[in-house]
Image (tube, rainbow, N blue to C red):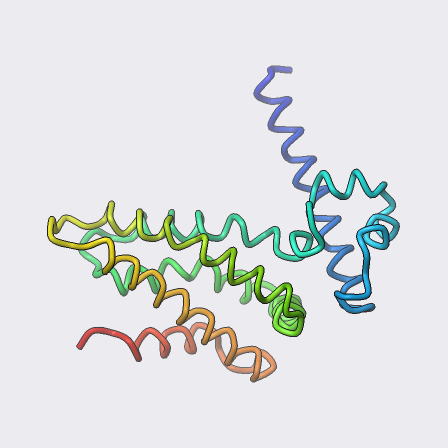
Length: 197
């Protein structure tokens, strides 16, 4: 077996273990409450040592929000893939479909996760911090799409921040509706409220 294949197999196995640990953590947080569960509780529930759990997740928050790390790069990649003649605002809206798709594929799980995050101040703050970290990647992707020499970094930063706020407001409304409202429609409506006229 080549070194690359071995590394790929190892990465796949590591990702599977990480996903399993995250699922165990999520279920325990839902049952017991985030504040009551310790790292030792998480390790015991997963059947691993505390040090093994910490190799995958450095904090309890990361056990819940670890998946958010990749979202920024995925949205930025989707933004780069949008048609060159599409305006930035429309391209940002369409790029966020990569996030919305996860809610569509597992609405019950997404609703439970969103509620856990919103009801736990430490998780809510950490999620916003992670999402704030997506902005530079979105700004960079917008810059790569932009042919206009006079376009400012400030303008791209504002558009990226506004797009993420539209996503958050849409998710808030979707959660408040108990998942009954269509998240795509909510996001479209949020974007339309700020669309240039």
